[in-house]
Length: 434
Image (cartoon, rainbow, N blue to C red):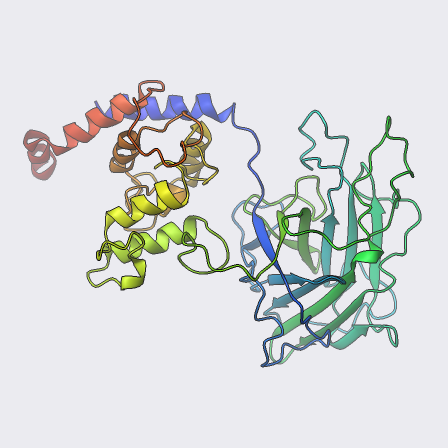
């Protein structure tokens, strides 16, 4: 029986793995501000960045699947009617005084790739409408001490280009090269700190005009000289070159910081909306971190009343189900929280590699813990089967009755048989006396 289940799981992975398309890159909320931060290379004790979303800090060595950035790279951003404000911080103490007058590609640099995506291409190069990658690239050297770019002075070197349907090469037509950008850095050796504040005005995103290219041959995804609207999305890559080693954001990093595959999506939001009910940790995003925090509260013997999402006076599994079904309107088993429970979710959790791994309480929702016990095991498939949403598409709004289950490669049957087998007294005795 045990061999049958493991064979079924292996078969499932092989079958669905070939049919899963590229996952949407991480989404980062950029909040609107009516009081922009001062670009001075310092984060004051005031609230100039207080309205920004939580730092994005899951950086790793680009081209590697598991080598993490050891200097705690992190960034956040804001936007106003005038432009984009970007804050980068790191804990690093190896700064040198290089790249003030002339850009040094092998030395420390912060690199941004931004695609306003006015042509609405996926940027993966995989869709029928994709004709290539469009984007602006800005690379800034990070010399030791203080450095600035302003109307009055320029004490750090930068390299920029714009490209249409290609990675590099200034194919964007006439462009101001971020002529009105502002930047300020403070990079300290003794304190092992680095900080960059950056402002990019919207009217500098003018590398093309709508009539620059022939629509029948090329399209333009660059021209965006006005402020975005609430809900607009831009693709972005962010990376830091540290002595020829590239560190960047992304769970499956590209080999280069400006590769076709974006590291993420910048979604411009008003930043003034009330906290969503599903945003348990109040970081402006409803994601797996919220259900993991809620599950931890349910496991706690004395949970805080704030986790009573359904207002029944208790903090228990009913609150977890309320978060999944009512607030997120999805299914148990939707690991990537795209609104459906499908083969891509199964591939994702098995790739995470935590199924019955013998490590106590190390799994979260995205790693297969759908029952809330911090483990990924047979029980998680049982609760997902009971919810019954596998391959049914989006959950009907306000319709949380259990539909007829659908089988895939006999997986559910095998898993249920295994669950029953493991719980029978005879088999329990065999394991304990072996």
